Amino acid sequence: MLITLVGEFDLESAHLVRASLESCLRDGIRIVDVDLTLVTFCDRSGLNAFLDAAQQTTVAGGTLRLHHPPPMLARIVRLADCGFLFVGSQLAPLPPSAGDTWAAPRPAPPHRPVPPVPVLSGDAR
Image 1 (spheres, rainbow, N blue to C red):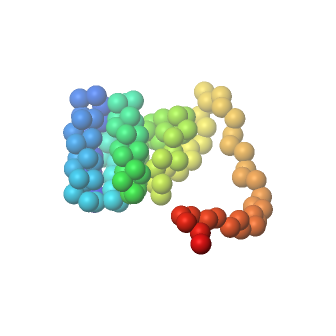
Image 2: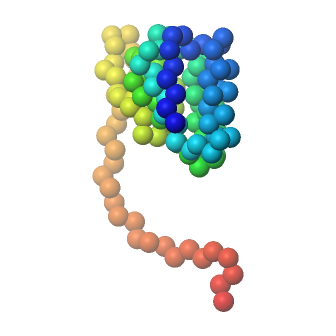
């Protein structure tokens, strides 16, 4: 399902987006793409709506993906460290602005293979 948002995404409109996303889940849709190309403003109400939707979608076995977020929303998501909720989204890292004081992300540690561990489930006979 593709949902395209237009204009401001704030306290007054967040309930509409929540209702649309909940409707998708009720209808059995498990992959929801949200196009943010035409969003001109998003506040914490909008971010909270996305966080709630991402949680509900994950619980239902689905995925919420944000596409083309405006820079201020991408920055808010990055600062709140909640980009992990938007699996497969196109939230590209932003270059830090002059006022940013957080440290640059550390590189991922090198991959070390982990030996498989047998797991038993149910009654073993």
